[in-house]
Length: 82
Image (cartoon, rainbow, N blue to C red):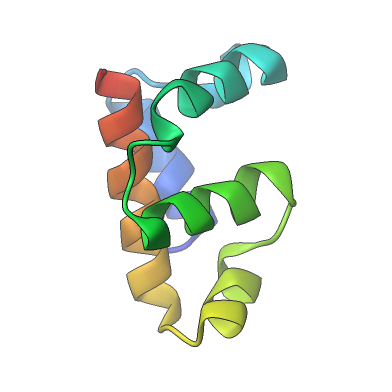
């Protein structure tokens, strides 16, 4: 799963980050980020606050890119459902 796939899947669920203002989107994520396990919190922080790509995060965390992408996707869904 890559970034494009993640966004496409969010679109299918009616969650469209592009339609939200960036601050609103980040506020939505920030509300639950402190409660996340360390790896999930780190992936979300690196992606949304530091601007790293999924590929770059995978390199930094020494994880497989598909694994990082799945954790990112699942975590975003979890945070948005709260």
